[in-house]
Figure 1 (tube, rainbow, N blue to C red):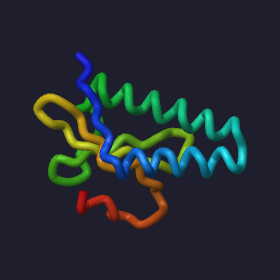
Figure 2: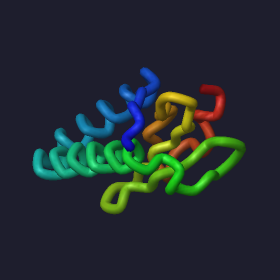
Figure 3: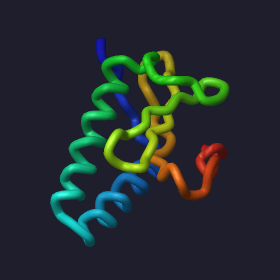
Figure 4: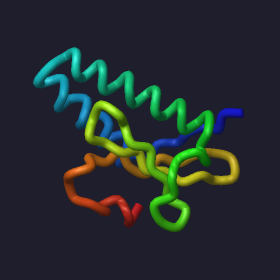
Length: 97
């Protein structure tokens, strides 16, 4: 059974910024990024405990075609996405969320 997914406002902004960055360079890449992100969020919703714990209760889903990871926690009634983080920029910046 799927769990509802909540995006932290910072994570929403990160997704939007990444999409716009790809869009400025290539519309196809932007759409592919959006599609892969949607797929990833659905996978997380469907099977939240499947993906590895990286510390405490924080889990990571790594996108296949783009250098981004989705960092999230599983609550009692929903999944909370804390960051959609570029894998090569500012490691750990999202920890304060």
